[in-house]
Length: 279
Image 1 (cartoon, rainbow, N blue to C red):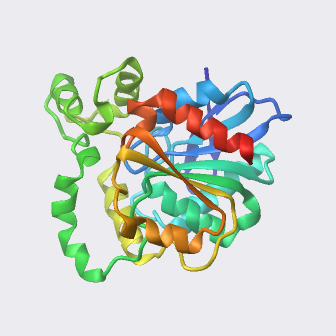
Image 2 (cartoon, rainbow, N blue to C red):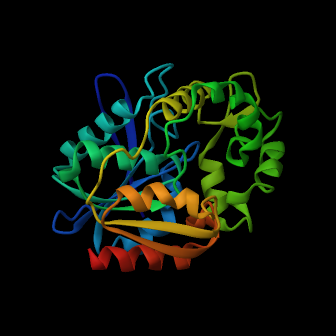
């Protein structure tokens, strides 16, 4: 079982889960996607813990970490991760990054490549710089994206769970998925229920995603693109920037949807393990 830890910075408290604190093991950093939290990696962390020192943070604005009103830049997120690595005594690490944090990982690899020994990008999104006129479409996008439908507010816990059971990331409603859902929701001061992920974080992160390109120069870090069969990256044009800029890239299909670590964890865990063993 992982241990919940906290990194105290001058601006925020960064909460994280830690498996296997043996310093002799390989380091592995797990980064969740937008509106998720560290517990989405429960199955992978438990599976790999015998062989890796694993850390999964709740990124700022998510889970148990601080939720500032502003400052959700990639620069700040990377500074959080750098501070976390310094606390752990890590000079470098393998990284698994899902969805929006896949763009974060690519920017980090571009800026500070010696930190990343390899990176596994799980169905990454928003890799391009987006045209500014698309900001007007954000309200519609918030309603369309299934993972944001669990934000609430909901009048009761039961209403929130009913909505969650209909979402892609909770297909099957396994004990793992139930645990992840329950850890990501809370009762608000007015009695309603909603996600621990905040509206301020949602809005600021989408603004940052729009303004900052993810891949702009060649990156030689060994990389694996995990492509779920029912994921978001199904067309060649979506893969093109990764093939162009990631010069040491492998692609691998896995079963499941955008959240293969929740919907098909066994196959996903084995895929990650195989790549890590190669690198």
